[in-house]
Length: 429
Image 1 (spheres, rainbow, N blue to C red):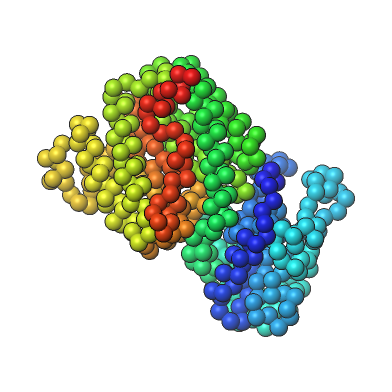
Image 2 (spheres, rainbow, N blue to C red):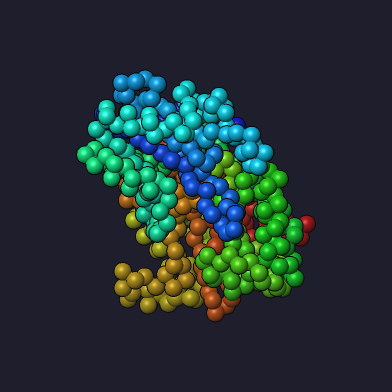
């Protein structure tokens, strides 16, 4: 891994919190992600299952974590099973965790080879009544791929039909939504790398540059600062492309007079940053571009203040919508008279601002969490209002990452330039 070692206390504490939520006489099992085939004999780059990483810190394929807090055999109350390596694997793939290294990384004393798991697990099931299974239950997820945890769950239900089965995902979603101090530090590091990339690209953009060249500058800064890479596919969208919310082709020339929307974030130690900035390709906003930019910035600043403990997404989104309506009327994109007559269930501002303002951020860029419970201290959200005007070839979105604390919101990206004047000054050199 490129990132610096993380103290095992983070993962030990996470396991302790999860175990405290388990019913008595229960086993919980977590599997590493699959190595996904790409084509021929190649695989896509491995990315660890975030729940496995959250509970163990192990960033390697073919790993299984077993938690059985009241197991009659103490050695198996926390047990980690890792891939058994050999000389052939070492030559072709490189170093893999030793038992000692896995114990030091995870804080789990009892580490075994994965080929020992089946025998141990079959024995332990005789002393368990409940089994916690871990599936990807993100409320925006939909997949037909039978991933490893899903296959494991199906096999287990067939082999042990009389046990009771529980869901790990709701427990982990609640736990992962509240970030510890160590996690916030890792997210901040990802943010700091992202800032370096943005400042780098500010000095690079000019008319004639290709979108993919800007993307290359971003990736260069990520990798040279120990990031794994991007936390998601970078959006580098000039002109009308900025009105395509998930545009990732990044293959157009940045032209004089265009606004360039860049939505990117570094991934460090599996934790994500998520930034969006919009800059004038020639270094100067036109009057209209600046008016739209300042409108979005005002909504960002207003929305950021509302990311506080006790607020709800329903109330938050409603208030952001009212701010956006006001700005769109001032920009003459909406008429105040039409807004007064609108269907409340189909607000007119959605024509120009069609996505949500915030999402959870953490081990996933769209991290797990319950959108229907009040916000709590320790949660991290994006804040990303936007205005998209296809007929003007203009899209503006601004996004910062916000930590909720007992004393109010803390902007983790407060040092990253966002004021229009500062952007112009930095581009002027």
